[in-house]
Length: 355
Image (cartoon, rainbow, N blue to C red; front, side, top):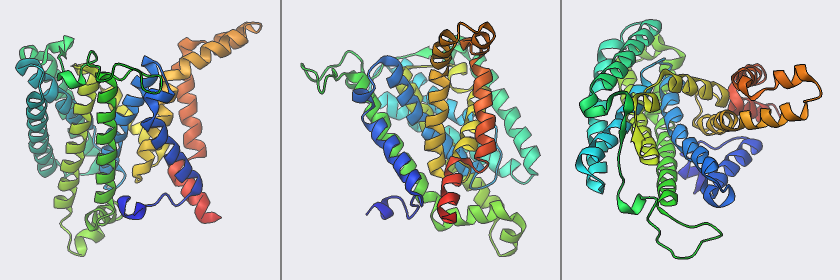
């Protein structure tokens, strides 16, 4: 049953299986186990980034395509929900229309980029996608009548998902259930379904062809596969999943703006997470997202404690200052790449194979 659910892509490492189980259980019970607004925000962000990074890994890790326009589709999904909800008001119809329109735009745009650009060499395709993403971000900032410009758009969700909605009078396991908790579990269900769908795609005959193209494009072409068609389909599927991840972000924040979903920083975060977790593994998206986002969210707090503990050594206290958290995050990333060159998942699986 489990093998079928995971499309035959088992962890193949006892340590990896335990880590994935802990992540699943931790995210499933996050509102009850990790109380507080910050912890819940981090858990929700992990769910969103798992989908976003896994969709990017379909493009980079499984097909070998380097694209810098992935966050553009992420932003399209977020803007679709935000624009529809702000103009039509709170309602399920607005959410459905916004997501549907965003998926259609993402489909057409990714299809156009794929058909017209994937024939060129990898570096030129990467530059084309970077230019398209930058142009779209500028366009989103300037079309203030629709997108709210630099200020972005705030909107309301259906009452069922509103923070003021409380279905139960009493607390459940010490937590008052409200629309915010319900929204979190909606994101959780969406993330699980989308990750399972991606596992199905990459372990299907279609996914095997993508991996063959990644390993040797000319050989795949020689044995009869239309490489451009497969790469374009991969690009389209990746864009659609990223679009849904953007809609998930908008649902959680009830706001969207250029810096929230279209910034190049998000694209860099995706690249870092893919490298940390392991390219060509959907599980790597989950492992990498958890490690990176927890480090990003709590490293400053940890450094603050360490700096206070080292107050007797001024030079060490200054080095451990919370203001230098980006420096230490970079050090952690370098160490992770050095000790896990194939990512955490790749290292664990190779250790299992070696044993």
